[in-house]
Structures are given as C-alpha cells and as structure tokens.
Image (cartoon, rainbow, N blue to C red; front, side, top):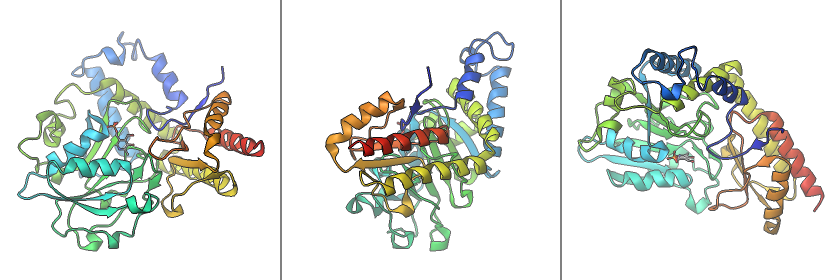
Length: 364
Ligand SMILES: Cc1ncc(COP(=O)(O)O)c(C=O)c1O
C-alpha cells in the first residue's frame, strides 16, 4: 500500500525514516535486550539517549548556552499555567498577551489566574487574519513578561520575525508558544526569554513538551508552583525530577538526527518555503479556493483555505481521502480546509495535494 499523505495538524506525520528506525529498535535498543520504553530512566542507556538528544537539539536549533533545555509533560496548554507560575513570583505580576488566534486566546485566559493580564493586541476584530505592528500594541514597560503564539495552528497566522521588545523600551522577557513551527525555521533566540512547544507537530509523538528557558529566569517561581513543573527543579534534575516521557524523548532524538540529514534548520526552512509557496500560489491562482490571512503573516506550516461553495466541502474531503490525502478538514472554529505541512511532509505531498485541488476545481 502506498503510504498516504497525512495533513493532520497534530499529532502529525513523522518522517518515515524515523518510524522505520524506531520500528527496527522497538524491542532491542543497540543490543541492550530492552526497548527504549522498557528502560529505567536512571540507567546508562537512557542517560545516553537523553544526553545525545539534548546535544543534537542544541546544535540543530543553535540554542545559546544561556538557555536551559527542558523536557516536560502537560503539553502546550499546561505551559499556559506553568509559565506564569514560574515567572510571576514577584509582587504584582503583570502579563501582556498578544491574542492572534485561538491558542494565544487560551494563554490569555489561563494567565489571568496568576497575574494582572492585559491584551497587548486583539486580533479578533480582524478575524485573526492579521497582526498590527508591534509599535501599536498595548505593552506595559513594567510587564513581568509578554506572551505571543509565534504560529497559530488553527488560524494559520505566523510571525515571520519576533518583536524586539528591548528596541521598544520594554525590558520584559518574551514568551513564545512555538508548538506548531518549532524546528521549521531559525529561532531569533536574542529576542526570546522562554520558548515552549508540544512535540506532536514537528518534533515527534505527543506526551513531551520542550521548554527553552533563559537561566536568569529560573528563580522567579510562585510558591504555589508544583515541584514537577518548577523550571528550576526540572533543570537541576536534567528533566528527570519525575519520570520523563522517555519514549517521546527518544523519538525527538531521532527526529533531530533526521533534521541533520535534511541540512539542518537552513535545509528544512528552504523546503518549508518551497512547499508553502507552492500551495499558496495554487490557492491564490484559483477561483474556487481562498486563504484570507494577510500574506505577511501566512503560516508556512498550517494553511487554512475555504471553498467558494461550502456545499462542496464534504465531497472535497471524501475525494481527497480516496486520493490518499488525509486529514484536510479545517478546525471547526474556522471551517473549510486546513493543510498542515510540517517538516515531515515532503514536497511530493504538497504537489499531490495541489494536483488534486486543481483537478477537483476543473471538475466543478
Ligand atoms: C500553538 C499551539 N499551542 C498549544 C497547543 C495545545 O497543545 P496541547 O494539546 O499539547 O496542550 C496546540 C495544539 O494544537 C497548539 O497548536
């Protein structure tokens, strides 16, 4: 059977080479007689897996030495609470959140449990199709931190560059939820205080969350912060304060080795530009399909598109499935379609989708 192309927004397609390697090692990792799932996290073999994974991630993502790299649990949504609990230990914490789509909307609501929260930008009146220039955001000079979602998975809105808070006279760390575009492009680490990402889009299986945190931010937790979610404790214990999601971490290691084989971040970013350009060009040239996001903020990872006649949606999806193109249904809050074209989606998958879309349009 030909493997279909899976456009799911997450959990999402994983490179076949990675799945095959994991499959070959599933019952016996390098002659140990144990699969990775069966090993003690305190043993030498898992220690090697963890250390190699950390080193590979640091190298591929060019993570500067002043950042700690943590593997945590709870996903992106848990970080919406874990971040304020770790950064808001001082008196009268203030958090400014740019709401550019559903995920930052959730971050905004959750942070309110811990801090005085202000909406720095509200994308809702713009149907989350664009983002105002950062100079026009409502930002407080004494904010504890500023939060944004650097790629909105549902609305398909991506920051092509991050705001430079220092240049705006704001001395607060920038927190980014980069769950759905981590490792798809270079990270502007100099502008970031904390970055977090659930793994299930670009990094591997669900169940592990990567957190990159500047060391200087490790000691600002609120007293109520649970120990297992305290960045300082997790960091002091090399992500093994509690039992980490060992298999997911191993898979991340394999995915980053695969990224090296793709030419690292520069190589994968070039592929992502080529894939997303191909799809947006096809949408823009068509009279059946449209994407409503401001071109300056169009996501390279998540491409939502609507059909001019919504009555065709069900047929589009059924025929796409029959053509081996899976999981194209858009999120219910925006409707239409969404093609998630993460790192592991090959250009041939995007070409197959474009060919199908053009053929479907011709037949209407
Ligand atoms: C940008 C973003 N943030 C957060 C989440 C929530 O992640 P989780 O379900 O792992 O908590 C998602 C999930 O799709 C997401 O796309």
